[in-house]
Image 1 (cartoon, rainbow, N blue to C red):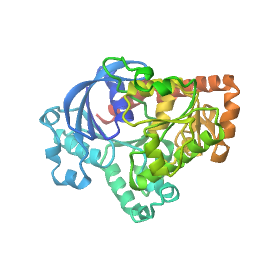
Image 2: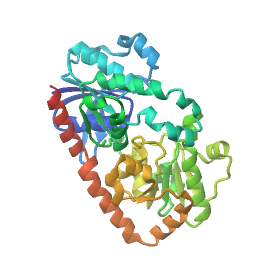
Image 3: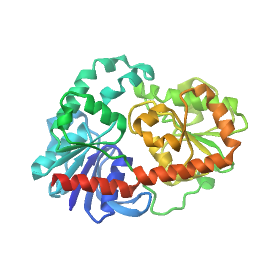
Image 4: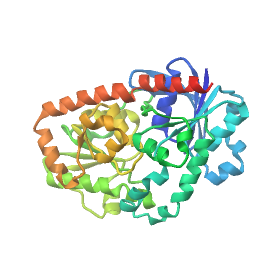
Length: 382
């Protein structure tokens, strides 16, 4: 079977495509990303296997550019591919996917998460972005248009499923919940070591890990601020514990957050390869990932993929209720230092959490589950 995936999220979209490629299907992942790369084979790592997946990448156009001249965005290799099914995500990938599905007269499957209108409260509370109120109704109408133009809709989390079902008449559209899996893009030669690239971090014996993307700007950057404040507070109150912040530098933190980070707060610049990211997760004692959006969190998914103990908040359980017994949950962020201090005194609890995470991952998030459930949907529509 020939399957074409069109998406803008390299982690779980590529994970979905790769899980089906692992079963022997002919798969191309069309990534609406940051640069142009022709169709090529990329080494992709899932939870149970490594394989090569065909990937095409184009720079992310605006929605207007896509609607104005969609054919100019698609290479000849894709136009001649003739898939049996097209799978896309919302917005720009949806319009590209819809065009290619219509061109080949094949079904379009829409995978949905993080609906903009469903994140209105978080945009206002954490991002102080009141303009989202204006876009609330247009966001719903745009999403409904995409839903009704697709053969079947897959949601990646419970919050999105409930929100779409609450919209008028969406009960008429076939819907299915399938949790995402994760894909890592390791280098061909695994010569990366923390000692060579991040010697200061390599000498740190066990630490708390958090990821704050400091390169973001505007209202989106404001959503990074709550997590940084939490990690900063942990480092200030637990001076004998190292707190590693990935995807930013100390200089960026001083400039953007207007604080002087304590010496036990260490920083890793953005752009580190997946090989290093893997080592960072493996050496961490605990990952702090409160989720501030009702949307699939790549940070949360990544920590689950690496089977790490996790401290998060209740929004994570709105997305994935099955995590209830394998993660530590608290919405009282002021108590995070106390929670962490108690956890680190009891290594058996951390070990038990790791085992529970593995069980939940295998049941709901693994590439095997992803492939099995996606294949059921695909067979329904062809």
